Image (cartoon, rainbow, N blue to C red; front, top):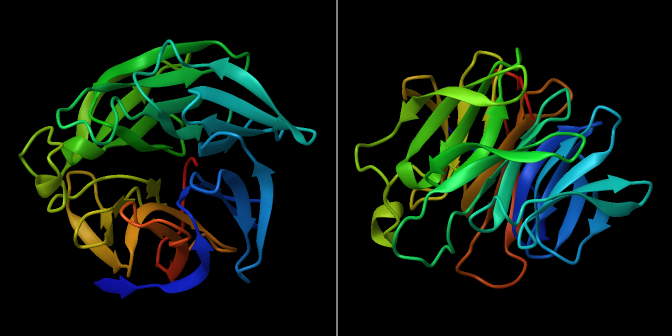
Length: 289
């Protein structure tokens, strides 16, 4: 089944990191350097204006908002109207930090680019764990642009997109937050790690992802088909959403958890070309974020 979306809000820069929280969609806009919210009525509010590009979002158990600071390679906390640094990741991340998932304990898992986007050859990256006390450590290495992490409802499994390897990769989560038993959750082709742009345009490129209550994953794929795929473990594609621009992230939310928010933009164009689009789906969201 192929679905199409309607535009909820436009005039954005490059929206990423969507999270449904307290009745609104929260998201980062790294071009406009903002963290904002939008309701189902399309009303947009800017929550934080940053000096750096924001990316992944999440919440500590006490309700404090966590924000990934991309270029500065840091994890920040928004508390009582101001930002403060939780952890400096500059000695752990190979390149700019990006998406993040935070579990119920406040354990934050953060990926990074590995190397600049224009670099022709692949440099593998890390997943970094930051605990609420600010301690940080590398818990996975040799990741092909780790993106869009999710955690299952039982908090025992982390699943992350490896954009340059066209796959979703799963790990077991130990009580101390460390990761083990790395395995392929879904593989979309057999090309391996590829960064050549002509090949990337044709591949499924797992960027932002979200988990639903049946254990399937929606995958935003910013390739030439501009689609979001619903995938079962093993790689079977069971649903598709097409968008007019390029999808980079997705999130299930709304009152019943069945509104799929798709965040779109275009890296090749300047200005406010970003949008948030929506479509109703059959199965609600689950897990984290």
